Image (cartoon, rainbow, N blue to C red; front, top):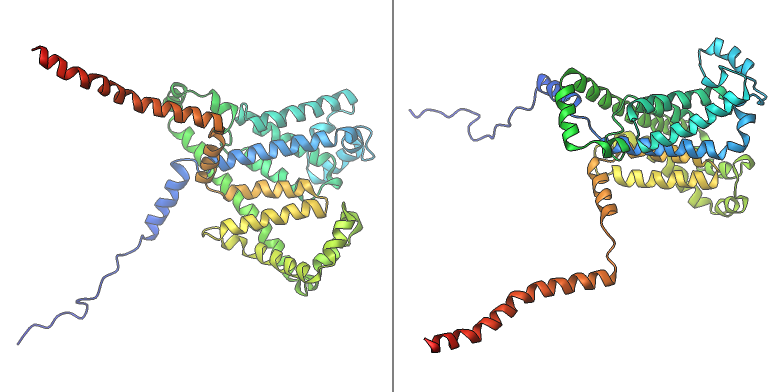
Length: 368
């Protein structure tokens, strides 16, 4: 009697996947081994530092009416509100106009230094304090863009956002980096890495929550369901910097309805497409959405804040490729001709030597 083969013979056995302990180890290694998305953190630092500097310069003629001692919302009223809400502002420590002007100049300087990445570890904390102080001083004049830039400034204080594209990165030499690694290797470097990675995760989660909640909130509205929401938005007189352009777009009802449905779809689907190739077209369409909000509704600060926040989802290889394209010298026609001439000259040199030596070889042989 022949032995029977087991029932599983000939059936390919699938290798066992990583267990729960292996996945936990991979997650721990991702959090502790090296800081991730350093270029994205640098883009957030440059973007928010530049935006807040431009914002302060734009409101420079109206600084006293908004944040200064001459504001209708006086420092005394602000301090009474702080007693109830727990907010703190550097601008309310004194009612002196000279003190306020010094704080305003310091805020401009801090924004510039944060954008350039000078002593980023300390300046990032100071930048967060500046943004929180100005936000709390005029709490009733803020909007969604102010709220988001406040959150991002606090999150960026925990990141290593000065390691790329900064004055700190230019100042570090190879020997200084080796000395610093030898000195601070161990628990401190691991703590910095963990804080950086966790802060970037919180930033990404914040943006996903913002888009997802906005999309789900729109789904519940009847005007977004029947495609007329953007029609009402374009007819708001308070948000019409270009009334003629708003009326022109409002005349295309079908296109307006499609744009409304696409807006809801992008916001709801955004948290679910981050780990696939659809992320890039979705980010491109969101860029167009925010550009439309800036132009049609007159909210450039909010749109720019959202565009900078979306940059956290682009990988480092994208920013490295952009940096390589930026550093690539522009080749003019004359420069290309000179390079081509130099190359031809370098090629012809050995040929000329062989042409000179070949007729001499027979003469030397005849002499012998």
